[in-house]
Image 1 (cartoon, helix red, strand yellow):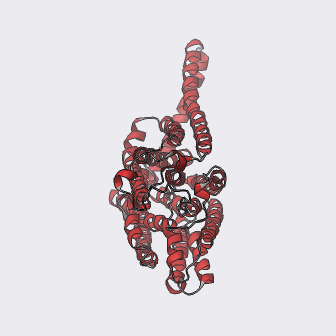
Image 2: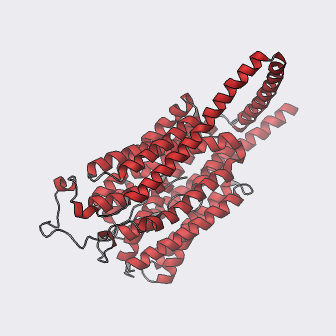
Image 3: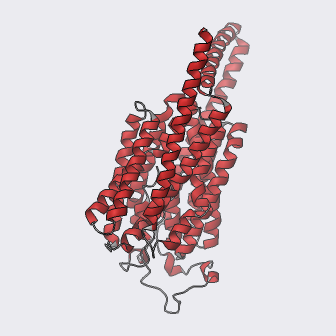
Length: 474
């Protein structure tokens, strides 16, 4: 799964534990740290075992965790489970990219983009489903602290922010009279009273868990059936020598095709080791800074608009996030088409430009014009559309995606949150809302530098290849 799953996990965390915003942020950081560990170890795991078997098993495990999480009412247990979910998420994020490009090679871009689009759609639909099962207290109309959470990913993956913005800002109208406003850390980790957990949110979590487990088992059945078919074929070959000869010929042809594909892959990675390492490293840096921007924008957008000079209402801010989600969905859909026809470097340049334009508009008009604030939000949301898939597609086309490179890219995408960047922004954003835009613009500068560096490495490799070809004819 990806960051979309985290959104529902954190919503449940606030729903049944009545914890503080600081502790939810801490839980988010723990999950990101777990995702980094999962991504870091994924290269070894997928290299040692069958990729499809490992990936399917992880999906089943994630479904089981979804069943378990709805029955936990202790915060520390939630934090531990979030950490475990992070590890599984890091492994599955890497595995999905590996499997897609393993099957379709250089033509895998549209399929990865389709996967990202599917997650975006699920992020829009899931809040509508979960809304029905929220507790009465969570539907209270009293507004308090403005905060939201969304870790996505992957690969585009911020479409669930609306769920948090509309849930995490509400306070319980039926608190016990004996509860003090300021709770101690010891009380935070205690199991919450029964009256705070009067929701039926366990129902959708159970359904989600069951569907995930079924999907994982269906995927797991594929390699098992292939293994069974191969064994059955071996038995037939031992009985019928003629069939054995035919099978041998077929196997030789398949081996020739595999050898040809392997040579094609070697040509993809024909760049020098230095160029391959440099390209992958710059892509990781790009992901690191981009997801620092992406995560904090979705997490603190509501806080930003409510504390700006325009004093945007919470309902208006949530509606703006919904509009941003629509633009993300549209761009993700268009990305499926353009992934097969447009070079990934051009897509990345366009998306980065959109994010930059949106933040520049916010820098000058976020405190003076509501219309321009909305326009900037829509433009920035469009820039978030298909960045994840574009980077993976670009890397595959230029140097080829290995297990190690996939692992490094996913690790980089979670690292910004894992090192506490979101917590730093959250500490200052209420007093100085513009810090979100200012840091975003600084990050965009680094993104542009990364894109220019990638283009320079690409051109240098092309020049070297032309020189090698010319030397062969001389």
